[in-house]
Image 1 (cartoon, helix red, strand yellow):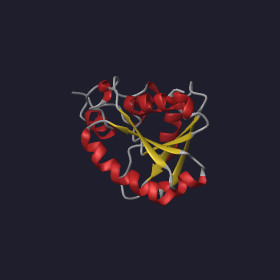
Image 2 (cartoon, rainbow, N blue to C red):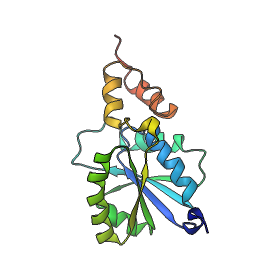
Image 3 (tube, rainbow, N blue to C red):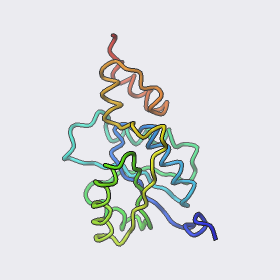
Length: 170
């Protein structure tokens, strides 16, 4: 029995702030959708983070447009503990993407805490090498300094970025 078939029937939650969604995030979503029957992209409402560039509604709409071709992917948001949201949604696994080794270090303790609180394991998907250096923070920084981020975000995201704030002229 191959690994994909043993995971059939499982539903995954892929949490993040997605401010903005990058092609790296989209790659993880697409790969998770190929493994799990259902994937819920869960936009975190985190009051401890700095003011996001995009509203919650904008982030959800951009993600929905970007994943529109994936029938088994849905988008929602949550506040509070991921473990509570996972239990409420009866998910069987949490999915996290890892870009670099330091991501593993920070995500591992979170995964262990979430397992302790919800009895749900976290599956780590390594980033495609093309996107291993791309983060939402870097995308925003490059964009705000007038750089071209077309390669790093899905078209739905770029459209909203440009409508919200045209890139500065060099």
